[in-house]
Length: 161
Image 1 (tube, rainbow, N blue to C red):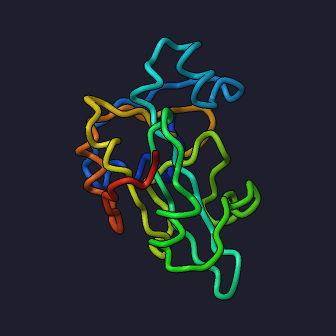
Image 2: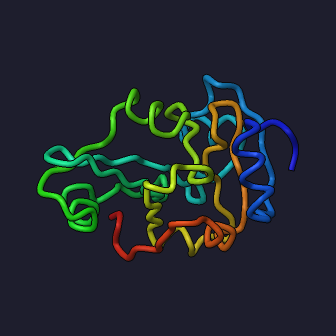
């Protein structure tokens, strides 16, 4: 691992004993499809972390990690799992406020303990997975088994389609 990821994420990766590679990228190339095309990685092994939020009553959040080739089942799987009647994607401002990270770089490492991390089971079937590095200037590449070390994580069948 090198120092191209932010300090908070770096500390979390170290503390959890995560074996990974950090890839530097230009901020404007951070969005998954553009990143993969520019740097020569497979979109089939890339995953995006999407923060969802309840729309009524007490605010509830969840971080959902799904393959970039799939779509998060927001209105059924995520809503039901969160136990709310209405749900939406968290806004960029909410995401920044809750995670301290910008869209295009959100990682499941170092999130507040109050936010569960749900990982679609398809992510675990990859040989390696590429995820956000905690900022728009880096990505993390690792064996998906490393995701099992995230506190508050759960593998969810059919979280995406």
